[in-house]
Image (tube, rainbow, N blue to C red; front, side, top):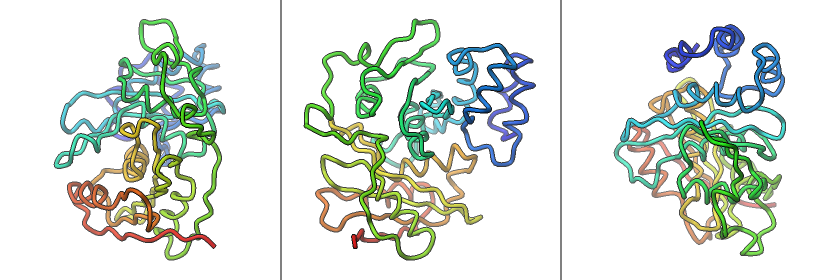
Length: 296
């Protein structure tokens, strides 16, 4: 079991500990619980979907990288498939506040990068801020997405964000987590191809600035993130943050990053290059290559 889970794990009910231990102890545990595993946990412990998600929140919060605030927020995104995806806030010393990742963004992006096509519910240990409410408004789950908080009745995103502004107001029909492929040609080494493939599945319907980032650790593991744009612009999540989120939730330290590749369109209205380079440099990585996206 990864050391970060040990303290939170010790607080869980004994019955849940016994069922969870083999899952958390697996060498390849990467911060998500499959639908079949969740089903076994619910059956073994007599829990509902909501009860299981609430019980797992301390484990998700244990994944937080709260370098600046020391305030750990955890989130669990339940996909339509039944898979449970951990999420946690991430902060980076030496960079601007705009580079941080909120727990809800973390859980949503985690599910998206793992191939989940839609979400049924978000469970979080603190009330979602306006930034996160707007970010979730980009999802194909729509205003009907269920949001669960400890000690409160379940509500919908529509309840938390009434009279909202979103993609439908701008006639955007392809939403975050919809299946899309922009068809960029994946060439080069494995790291470069991972960045290009991520860009091909990025969500940038407003700026058309499709982009992807791939990170490689010293051990050779590769983690790729995609740009997740928002109708209100500011809640947009850069591709680097998606990759950092996936790397961290998979159990790696941010200091493990050896090199990175950014893939973006040459004529886009905005570029991720300067912010990506600055954030990576703050994390101790100066090996960033930028490649241009091309179509056949």
